[in-house]
Length: 443
Image 1: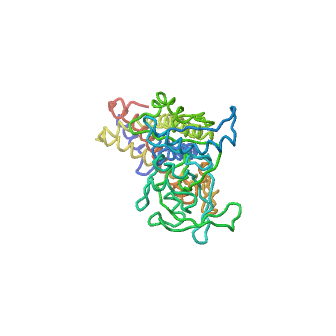
Image 2: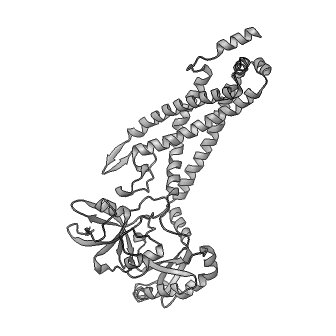
Image 3: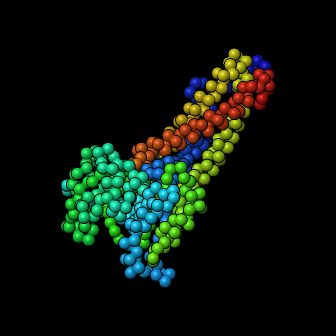
């Protein structure tokens, strides 16, 4: 017994010495860290995008699509007759029980929810920037219906909705104002110029009528800069209806869809599609396969984490079993159970930390090898969604190299650390609880 104890004591590692049995686990953790970067990076980025609020209340909105039909087909002449009917249509919709407000737009590429928005060239001084345009119908409750919020110092949404095309005014989002003037405060009344798309030398002077809070076009798109301009073009009406507070959109449509159709359908005009606004947004995202990509990234990350946990726990378990006799010897010489557990966890945490740092440095070399900064955009070998073609004023940590690298590295480190600590604690607790005599008999 004494001889075995002496041998066991001699086999105890000196402080700072890495056990031979831990080398393979250490190398495994380094490789896992690199692989974790590849798998977890897209999941972290997409979950971040999913967490960003769109900036306006979509729960009480209804989307409806209407066309001017003649003999069952879209007819431009019929549309010209129906177009004059649209302002009256909005008033008729507002008279429907449960409807708070209604507005419409005519060009899907200039709507708030457009995936591929039209851009306007704007300049204040020498520099020209291109920012997405949102068109709205004058005097048609646009800002009230969407629930956009004016910033302090700006007119009310009712006043902003009454801006006409001939007034030479425009409404800016907060990010758009910052892109143009460097600030969103005190810009009401300031002037800037709009560049003619077909003739770059032709410019239109515009005045800032107001600034509204940023909104996100879709949940997976980070574009927030927008210039809101009164406009009137197109042969289709896309109608947005806001319900009164306390109403459930899906249930309301089940009970009142017929009322909306009855109020809207007149002459050549017909509503041929109606749904909750949330469903409309979801369909727009499905068409671009964004949710499928996001869900795939998340499923892969979860699958990877489960396999990571099983692999690390299995490796640590085998290593801990080999240290059973060592644990018995330490307890025989007075080491307490909490102290032994803390020793196991401290060694595991140190190993996980060093391995994660080395793994992240290895990935850093790869990520930075593709680094390039062109026109303010940073390109690198980390996950950047192709649909995130945001103006410079809208860039987030995802679009900047070091914040992106550090945030994802911290996430990977926390995952590796937690996995190693859990994998260490489970067998360590079992071994520490065993009797000293049984532990000393372990081979």
